[in-house]
Image 1 (cartoon, rainbow, N blue to C red):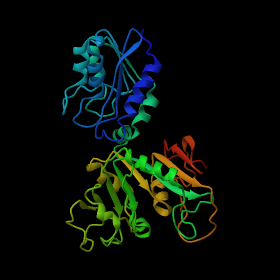
Image 2: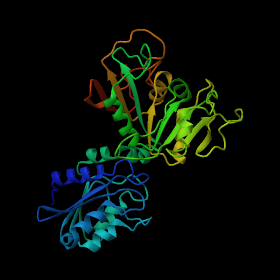
Image 3: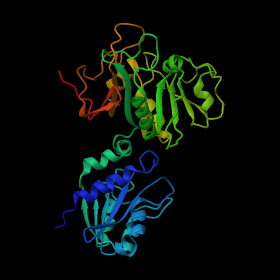
Image 4: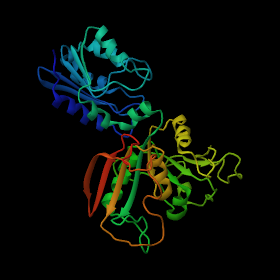
Length: 368
């Protein structure tokens, strides 16, 4: 029985991460070809319409792929889209064994790719370092497993939980703010409330020197606060579209018909707020897999309370603001059961003078 080498699979994960943030609706995938214990080819998927990771790695290996092992961070595809099936390319290259870290959650592929390889007489190993593989592209896996966009909730706060400081301005330093742009880059859309746009007048763009990407900007505007004079509309459509979520039947929106602006009709609930699950479904229809939510106060709590958050990032500055204007980081109940939200796999890291803690919300479970 074949036992794959974890070092080679970790290399496949590292390759996959090279394409992170630019592959959706395809997954971020990395592949490594190993012959007689030596790496002879590597590859990753750089985006829709381009060769998949397996094909890139096999081309790099050339004739050395015959009789070799192939390590892939995700089950190879067996379907024809913009490119041909990877399973056929693997067979044509003469690969002897394939180690796939995890099944592809896309129902068009899931299990079929591995079975196709086995039917071709290729030895396979499945489920090797599965958790690490899912962590490469959690939005892709979450989208198919939960039937909605993967939600990464972020806020910045002082040590005493305030999100507004006397005199205004940024709470965190440049290093933490740079991290925000990187996390935006990994997502397909950013979501904020109209009150945030009204208060901060943000651009909600991705400002990284070495990576350019347009991104959808989603604004929840149940009260019709947007005027069209906000800075975000000056960047539209060059930096990505702006989608305004409004209740159907609202007053005519002055932004309707503006290039790059779309109005998403979502009915409000009895409390006058948007049912967040319906907002996510509206974004799913538009192909959003990864959603970066920048929210505080009632909106951040509402996402948690609805059990719709998959990952939390809290940027903490070494400041004490005391009581003052503006909301707290969280307001109201944050768990469906009224208890606490359990965060798993917390990771603390320094960002200049600030700290960033990131954790998973595996389930909307609570402790009494």
